[in-house]
Amino acid sequence: MIRRFGLIFAGLILMCLSACQRGPDVTADEGLRIVEKYMAAVKAGDYDAALALCNPEYFGIRSADEWKLYFQYVRETMGPQEKVTLIQKVDDRRLSGRFLLFQYNIKWEKGFTKDSITIIDKINTNAPLKIFGHKIESSHLRQENS
Image (cartoon, rainbow, N blue to C red; front, side):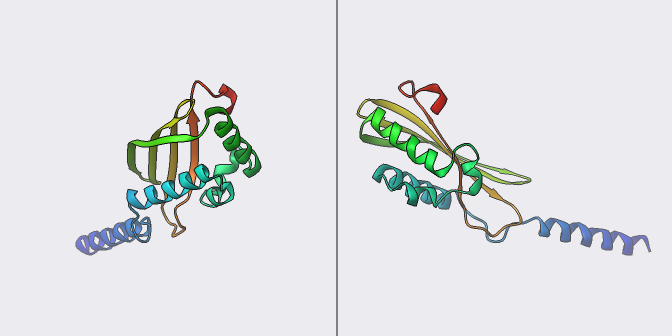
């Protein structure tokens, strides 16, 4: 009787654990491909294509129109991009999902920015990966826009 109860309990635990798993496991490389598409679209000034790669939560801080204006402001302030260097890639798996962070140093004609782009891959979803956030830091940019 106790043995049967133990088997039933173990089976329930396994079912619960398998229910928490996302469908196909994504890789940091898939996230990097999305970020690279996003950055290429921003660099080309195709802000609609860039913002199409973003999760609706991305627009919690700025609306799509505000992001477009901000990207234009960065370009006008910093000049053309000269070099983009990936400096850090973080792949952090948590109980509630997976956090991907990509940090870049971008050399512009008039200085440098440090860009941090995040993707959150939540469990229990088969939704495609989307960008959740983008932070641009530079002493050349006004503080309220970072």
